[in-house]
Amino acid sequence: MAKWNALSAEIEAARASGDHTKLLAHVHVGLQMLQEIGATNAPIQCESLLCMEASQAHYKMMQYDEALQCAERACESLLRGCKAELQDKAQIAEIEVFMGFVLCKQGGHSAAVEAQELLQKVLHWIDVDAKSAMPMQAVAAVNLRRSVLTGLGLSTTVQATTLASKGETAEAKVLYAKGLDTLIEALNQHIDENDVELVKMTLEAILTSFEGLDDVSQAVATCRKYISWCRRHDDASGVADGESMLTALCARQKIENPLEAEKAKETEEATK
Image (cartoon, rainbow, N blue to C red; front, side):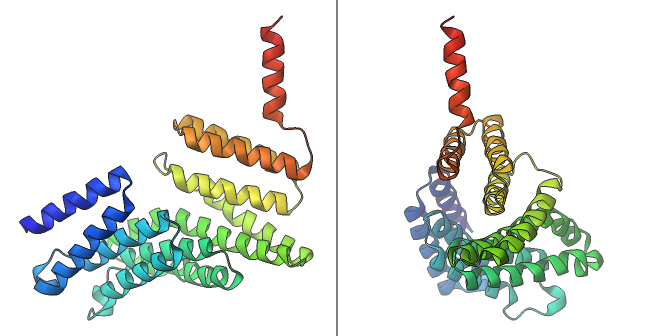
């Protein structure tokens, strides 16, 4: 076990430093070790954990095809040779939700439809099957619901955007409205203050939906919520991203940027 503990520490250090290439190299070493000694002599769910480390690293490097392949392998390793009643359904659902987000990032219409189908399956498990599952799995299902709703809203918004880009405006607006309802439902679930990135992703998709529905004032308000959320969590790069999103929105819509107007007013008052 000493080798595994050392490898785990190396993976953790690479993740903490944001060195995705080094992390992938450590994962490769781990998978080789696993092949040599066999799953029975390795830590529990070892292959799945290693593959998900790799999947998340690829995701952060915007290598979405590779991220999807690694997540699929992680999922497959949990199903392999395991009776249905013994499967870790919560862990499988968590991986499938991540796969849904990866598919949305790929950006195509068919990938977004695939994400929607996958996430609907997970939502059914959460709302129906997990209620009769073991307590730990039932709790995990409740905690996962908000991520699933965000993913579903995002997948609908991606589909709407692809339709809008082809000039199918009426159909796109129907999907933007549907996606918006789901995204707002996701935000209205209990917000975990530690889940900064998921809230940012939800707000960004809400912004896209409002702009797609030509509701510019709500789109502006959403940008401002994004900025204030990031300020609240001392996320300086998030604040900068939010300000850039607002600047780009105002330029597209040919309206005055309220942040610039406020800065001008502050400067004017300071010189009085």
